[in-house]
Length: 416
Image (cartoon, rainbow, N blue to C red; front, side, top):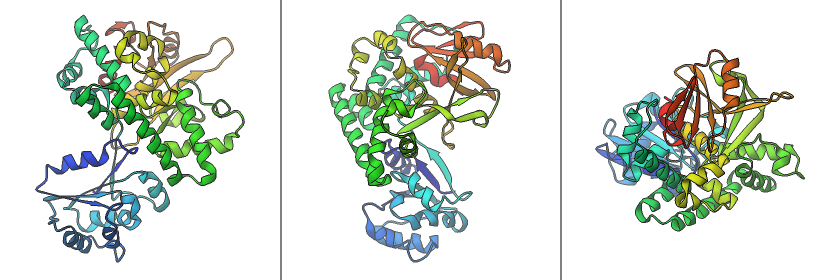
């Protein structure tokens, strides 16, 4: 099946496909935003054999089934090309086709995806393990993947990984920022990239929100980082604006991949979404460094004193955990995040995330320091089917009864 690659702008979709193209004898890229003539080739009919013949003539490159990767970039600019993907599967399945585009979700909503005729893959900012690899520390990632999570690491390795995680918290997972950090180790340069990306996202608002609604999108865009770690309440985002104006704005940002909601869930079993409450939810920004840039935080503290930053920035750590969970999820399905909360007089409790591990519900608490895990143990006492809970913090690997303590830098190893 043709593959449609989804993800927020600037997460590296086009770069990734080009690198993948090196595996093929021929690679042909068509960018519908740049090459307007290419779009006209899809207007006559949806016959993939004719389309491939004409694209070959237009680009001057052979497009050979079984030997060529055809990349249709910015495909949202050519709706007929999206429709044609189903016929590539039905009439020319030997040809490898990948499609991607900025804000592609909005185009698919309008015309519909060729269900059963295409596959999807979801791309997020770099995970911490990918950051380690990019920074030349791939051996550490390999070691963590193979490590017995009940045995502490050597103190020097633990400290090195905390230092590297501090770098990730400051640089984030956006490929341009990571590349600049690896090249120059200059956080100020990365911060310039962060500011540019934020402005780019704001400029996109007009592409998927009406002029009337753009101001509400901007309000929510700024509010999500500020309200991270708390139940999202529209009145807290903008006290003078009605929720009926802000709710669609949040949905637009989620569709654009810039915001992820974390839905409240009872956690009694799998699938978690079957018991999710659509009314009560939290929200996180899609990249921790951009989140801090929007808040105006001095995130150079992650480099100067990462230990203190972990203690003082619990909401950032919680957002990082959500970002990691999404990046490590099955790329063929849109990632979902869940949490558990009980609001009773004298007995309120909340667990930051609920995840599925080998068919079981596992509660996951993110603590910036050595805080207690009362809510985690309460959940385990009530949900007998959950075999254990996880506490993620800056502490070393350990275990206390049915609670596993996992360093934040190793969260990705425990979600498989």
